[in-house]
Image (cartoon, rainbow, N blue to C red):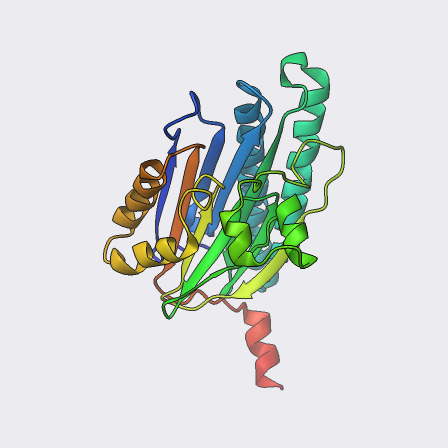
Length: 274
């Protein structure tokens, strides 16, 4: 399934004002509805190795799965793809490659990366995430965080020790409880949401929400929504103006039109007899 013309999007990554290099990686294949963002950790160079492996692995494996799906649709007359499974398996494979690289390359010992990725298909979005890189949605001017951080602070919020408002002001926000590559196995959180034309989806590393409050992110998207490129630039600028203490990566996707999966001939025949 090809999704050309269904989205407008912007993808930006910035070193910030304090770090001397960028350990974030971003990537996309818009024609199949795939966006990936990873925030690496593990010391000089190693973090960007981990995030780079994660992004490349997921892009390659999901592209291959979509190509197989296209061939199967032609041969069988159906257009169905288990997108959540495709995405989960790609992330698990990325975890294994990062972990094996860290074990075999002394300079990469201890590296890992957080991750958030989204795959659009059949008017839905499958989301996979590990760590504290986030995905937000704005629909009908309502802005909400869709993913929940895998972090010590989020666990304390879940247990009632902090409110979400107190957590947003906390200085101890960056202790993640899950990351790709740190262990041979990782638990990947998967969810699927319905998508509507006009929706905005924001994927970001923690360098954005650590510096810019959610209400200001919301206001920026609402104010500059005539130009999605301007929104991205403004979000990065706000992060840097507020201190830029970490690398900042932003992917913003606006849904322009519905994208139902095409029905194959066999599906159409079945509908006739229902």
